[in-house]
Amino acid sequence: MQMADGIVKKVDKPTGRITVSHGPLPNGMPAMTMAFRVKDAAWIDKLKEGDKIRFMAEQINGAMTLVHIERP
Image 1 (spheres, one colour):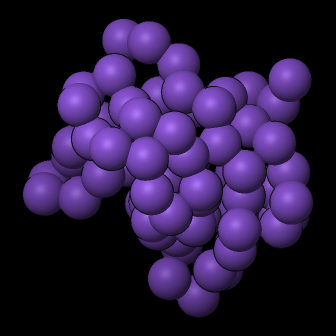
Image 2 (spheres, rainbow, N blue to C red; image 1 turned 90 degrees about the vertical axis):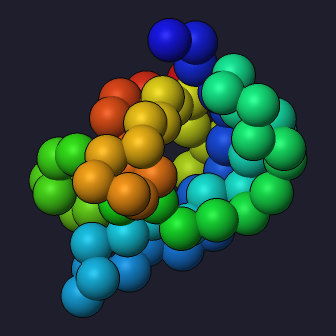
């Protein structure tokens, strides 16, 4: 799976979601801003609004989920 670039727009600790503005994803999803679940809850405390990230996302149990995150 290929990495995509994005910018963290919101970190929502109560729901365990991170909102990311991103370009087109390798799976064909167009550029947009959307909330993702996270595979590792610890990422919620490590990211903040405005962080640039590279990420991989997968559909897990019906929800788009960040499965890998790197900060360039």
